[in-house]
Length: 137
Image 1: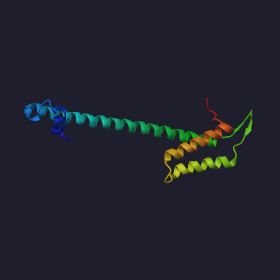
Image 2: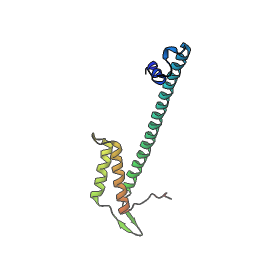
Image 3: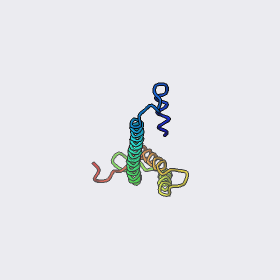
Image 4: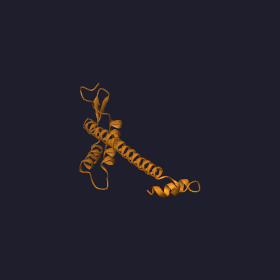
């Protein structure tokens, strides 16, 4: 940034840059440099904050993905209210999505593949129920 030009633009018609004492010009330049450093630190902080937010989102999605895989293995309700078996094709479709996440195919982000798998498992569990583990509360 050209501080001399900015100074001229601000004081144009009011004060000539040459009329300012050297000390005032030095202070102006110091202030502008400090302002630039502050802006850089703010941007760095914002980038760091966004990165932490993204990492937290990834951790949460990874956890949901593992829970969905566990629930897929328990999908289909067998109990006092009846037996609801998940059709083989539906389970195979979900397993294909799971494999797609594990292989991380090009052109398809891991995050999107995980979302698709979680969505599919949720649909299966909603339609056919699931058998929770014995220690489930």
